Image (tube, rainbow over the protein chains, first blue to last red):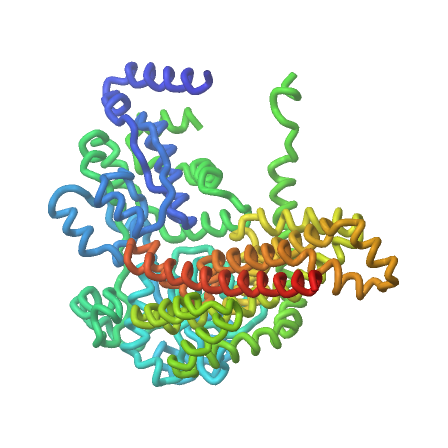
Length: 335
Length: 296
């Protein structure tokens, strides 16, 4: 009942506005609701704006990077991935873009983001000599591995994630085995986060992989360590490091590649929801706003839809810039 | 009338504060006692690490022979012993040896721990209806609560690795052995117990010589379920950093490596079948022996 009134109102509204071609054209869109906070927040904000502003019917599809991408690439579903980290899927993604099956609707939808190796702030403070990753690698004794206390523990990326291969390659490239390190696979995000929480709550040293923007980085103020070596070229990174030790045996030491995130849409979406492409093109989240929202989500235990509503209320000035005035008015009225 | 159409919820803010206070209390608890609890589990930890290192350091032909020998001792069946040896040869040939050893170490210790803790609990439960009333809902929780709910708290308390993995496995795998021990002991015919009493046996004699042998089929069904459920948890345990066959499975799920997933999955199945057949055959032999004793 409620829903039909609402959609009737949307239809009536769109008929009243001369540029109302938006609404009826958009139709049913499936959108990836990726399972980390910034992506689910972005997806839910997109959902509100596309539904209320552009008259789309959005179905959320839960999934992680590789699975979502594989599904978009093979089956053209879901139509939209708001925050796709492309390092892991670079080659097939660009192949699909060249063929015109997928499109990047927005490069870098969030500013100031990146992956790398991090230390807790108190470790940095207590050991000012640890200025770069190279310095840290000389001190495995500071980060003892519980299962093998004579060696250092480097917490890598959970099994199966794209970053697992890159971390494995860098582990080899920096000869960490020889320097007395073990590469610990935390197994899942719960494992990785749990290890950070445990170390930080108890003031234990921790050295491992993570990425920003995340509430974990914001909350514990983890410090991104410079690698102490330059980025050794994309040939080394894309052709070797990212492929993992099984595919490429001689990776060269390198700083982490600059992270690229795209909002990726299917060709179908581009065709049926043309005006919404303009929205994606303008939608840029400043890193500071995203960071603030992530801490909000963490502290208030807000899920994606709740946080998206909070964002729409608290950051009106920001999202109003992303859409034409008439769309903004419709969205605002619907809130 | 909105009171009836809309459920009178606790306010959103109160609910959030309520949740936050629980989280905060848990974090304080973990900060305060985490280290002590971690140290408490250290012996288990050292045993597990030692056992895994032993398995990994032993030359593979010896492991295969030991497995064949154990299978034969347990089951007295050449076929089963040979099958077990061939499966392990195949596992090694397909490059899963190291992970399999890690999993064997975890599952052996987990099963042992579950049995050592579970059977006495089952006995206690069978003796008192009140204990049964208290333990049964706890077992229900252990078996049905989604594992992901307690993975993070366990990791926050104990870190990632073997011990939290072992605990996660046992939480899930222990209930069947407790339940079936309880059931088996309760199903023993009252007349037989009366007869035992009338011959003047004390509680201990009655339990060990009468009740326990008669309850063996149920208890071994419990052991079987415990082993199966422990092996089913291998992948979940890998989600908190336990090395073993679960890791490649996780990796294959995320990357659509069908063959890798299938191979490691089948290795887990092979372990389950070997563990189960050997323990079941052993259980049957125990019972045949007891029955023979009665007839004689």
